[in-house]
Image (cartoon, rainbow, N blue to C red):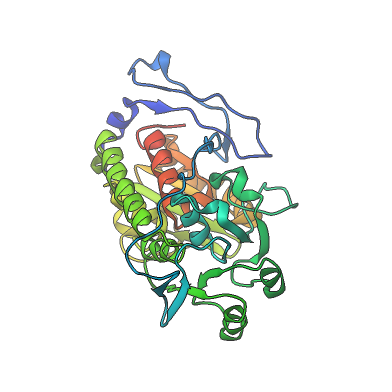
Amino acid sequence: MSDRSRRHARSVVALATIPAMLALSACGDTSSDDASTIVRTTTNVAGAGVVGIERDTAGLCALPQPVDSVGQQGDTRLVVGSGRATTVPADPQRVVVLTMTALDASCAVGTWERVVGAPTAPLAPTAPPSGLLRPDYLGTGIAEIAGVGPEGSPDVDAIRALAPDVIIGGDALDPAVTAQLDGIAPTVLTRASSSWLERSTLAAAAMGRRDAATRATEQYRARAETVGREQNSRITEASLVRFGADGTQLLGDDSFAGQVLAQAGVRRPGPQLGETRALPQDDLSDAEGDLIYVMFDGQAGLERGTEVMDSDAWKDLGAATDSRVFSVDDTVWSGEGLVAAGAVLTDVSNTLNGYV
């Protein structure tokens, strides 16, 4: 583990607040080692500084990208998804997406304005219980897309009414539902067992923008390397803890957040190498790190997390003692898309060498 005294001498970042619950905190950072110039925040949840609420989503989604020239067969193209090949329009004009990864992909490759239907989702604990719930990090335009039911339980009648020319979903759908969707429009299914980057690329391919997804992926990887280099990421171990209604998870290398951190060269604590696993209630030691990123899965996760983080056992962790616990947006850090990954990198850049 890195020397904590060295961490305290690094530049710090001001943190923002959870929407609709806390007052907005001022933002800024400093490169000075003078303690009098350090920007602190009084905004926190159970001692954790809250990160990333002041995201600038203006111009976030890519401009429309050229349609793929390779693979066209007249006005159509063949896209190979999970266990089957589907003939789709070469340049779809009306797209329904059934996963947040596909919705994120539409933003990343500039086709989001062609998306006529998208899933709704339970979002941050403080999100208002009204309207169409979408991840805030994707911006307000995407929030206005018509809803087609929650991810995993699409409203077939609502989809039919939107008259899409292609539907993009996942292979976890009930086969009977998939058959109904096939009767509405060509349906491309991504494979749940594939990586989030593979699913993003396939979704983009179904929208005729595989090349754009490849370019966006290259840009993401280059940025991750830059963030890692600028933050000297290899000297810091970052712990990932996600609180849910039924327990607490240590997010491993198999998690979206863990993979983005790895891409940026951020080290992970030994107990968190490998697969995501449960954190025992009676032993929080495996949550330790040079710093800890915490996520809350819904209101129940927030309540559970607050209870744990108010405990003496949590407060005895070195990262908590050093004021190096950061609350990050669960919809971003569990987002599984290129745009979400970029937002995670922004959070990492703003916090890896910071403290509350």
